Image (cartoon, rainbow, N blue to C red; front, side, top):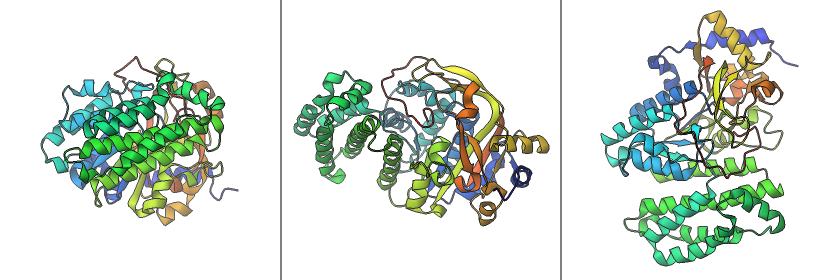
Length: 441
């Protein structure tokens, strides 16, 4: 039985709401989160303009004024590495061409107009500071099996041609699958061994090399080692999906938190990170039904690893509007209408507070404090999660995650009505297997 009724939740939102009209209004939020080592900025969908716009504004403030070193996103490492090279002035082209490296479905997640603004801003900033002060951009995800094979081979040739030959022979195990992750995953049913031994041997060989021992190739080796980890973990991800011996969601989030840890180590003991990912990855899993189902995520794992006072989790949500998504995995990009939030959900409560306050956009801070954690916002209600695969007509039957808001996030950004992203790329390559919970997040 809930200790607080719905009206007390709405009152708590109204009492804490800080209007968001322009970037200057963010100061209370920045004051709260800027002291953390890791700031995670969520989203309740992968296709909403306002989420990307305000994550960009917050990130630029944290980088420019508070010394944050990089942005790490729920995206593949190889295209993010290419983008990182571009914004650091190490590759030719322009911002639009740099984003065309994101050519795997769903392309709109990172190849969109809002990302174009971020890339241009980071390029200008990095051009006016020292190499040590430049901000980076990296991918945390695990899907890029064959792209990472290409990257390892290219970097290994540059570092050690003899080692590259051994690596190439082992990775040839994947050749018969025609760069199709689904074909490889299906083969594991009949041949469970797959290429597991080969990818682990390659990873071990690369990890034996020391960054400081490869003169002039430190960044190349760091890139090669990370891509080798991705290949090993991607192989394990597809193995988990086929055999069910471990939840593939957990394989993916463990890889993401390990990648974040490696990036922080790479930048040094005083480094600070910004993470962009879906609320289902950012919001503490222990404040939802994920823990009951045996699932973890990077938000909760980061709090456990670095301490709650060193990690700031910021959720994002909306009541209605537009979203870019697709009705099927690998399907066409569509701009869909988001129905009004489900009655009795946090979205519905935020909407009622917005109507009462006459504010379309606002945010809540200090949700992790003792008062909030024992108050109305600690109660568990449904909280919407929209994936890249989405059907608005059926969302109330599967798109709401039971959530204790004050335990899941440290702060929350709310936009009553939102617009869809503007994609840059309409075509894509699609070989990966979709994530299964919730749809494509």
